[in-house]
Amino acid sequence: MQSLYLSLFEEFKRRYERALGRDDLEAARDYALKCARILKVLAEKVPGKREFYLEKAESWENVARELESRPPSPVPQSNTRRMSSEDDYRSYVEGLISTSTVTWNDIGGLHEVKKLLAQSIALAFAKKPEAIKPWKGILLFGPPGTGKTLLASAAAGSLKATFFNVKASDVLSKYYGESSKLVTALYQVARERAPSIVFIDEVDALSLKRESVHEATRRTLATLLAEIDGFKGAEEKFVLTLASTNTPWDLDEALLSRFPLRVYVPLPDKEATKEILRIHTRGLDTSRLDLDAIAEESVRRLYSGREIANLCNLAVHHMLEDINPELADLEKLSNMDVKNLELKIRPLEMRDFEIAFKKIKSPLTRKDIERYERWAEEFG
Ligand code: ADP
Image (cartoon, rainbow, N blue to C red; front, side):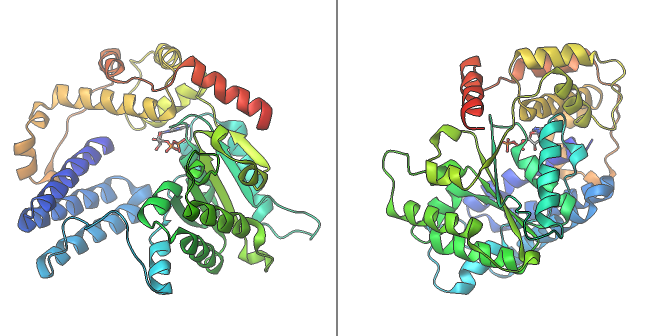
């Protein structure tokens, strides 16, 4: 059910972006309000994420208000942005803070990894004798979509720590030339708001092993390495850096040395796949499904958690469209009051999954998996 509202939200968001692109501010405002309304419905329907959706709804209402009073520039003038004052850096960094509602129970499989992370985090943030030195950086590596971001979110959620979600390539490309200062500001704000977890996704973007490395990348990497373990302040100011990569072989020695704890996050096996299937069909009747058969097929196809989540989403959509034909009519949908939408539901069936399987393909080959395993053996 949740996934239906989420895809409606995505559709309205796309329409909002298209309206902005053609400078139709009135339509953009209308779609922003629709996005806010759907998020409010989600806040009611998913009690565990109430705050999260209400916060998002509010930001869409702000977007709509802004569009009414002051037309924003619809298309950014260029890809790179310039910042002049410390406040600019800080406000960018504050924008990276995200509220995590993910718990360890939302992650299927990966039991050893979850235990290791939970232990390392407990050790990092607990009061302890000086001789016990916690890890300051942990590297998560493995194929894309296996739950690395999810693990970092759950770690932050379990601690109620401030969670900074940073994509290394974004920082480098959008704030070209200034990314080193951003990293300094990032750790400054993280310490002020400690306990904090800084999650650096695609950390390989900072590697110096690539063919042409720009000076800005070099500087940013040096700053990051210094920040990860440089601070010798009070224990309660502790900041843990979790970094993630899908291409660990691209990382250079300097970076690897800051992450002595390297955790392999592999593709799910059959049991893990069954757990992920259960997580992504929560609240629905799955009694007519042969979960073993679905899991075996998913493993055979080298599906990651992301593909399994997509598979479930597609199967649920198929079930919904099957018995709610009005859902196929998007025009009708966008004009109706989604809050009063009464959806019919039936148990999920194997045919929903058979159709979904046809649409989802893993980007990986066995050779890719072997490469991860070799790296894990040598460096993990
Ligand atoms: P990564 O960071 O490794 O590329 P993500 O953590 O972003 O992957 O996972 C993408 C999505 O796939 C998640 O938001 C979730 O819906 C699903 N997913 C991946 N792994 C799992 C898992 N182990 N359990 C439950 N869902 C998962």
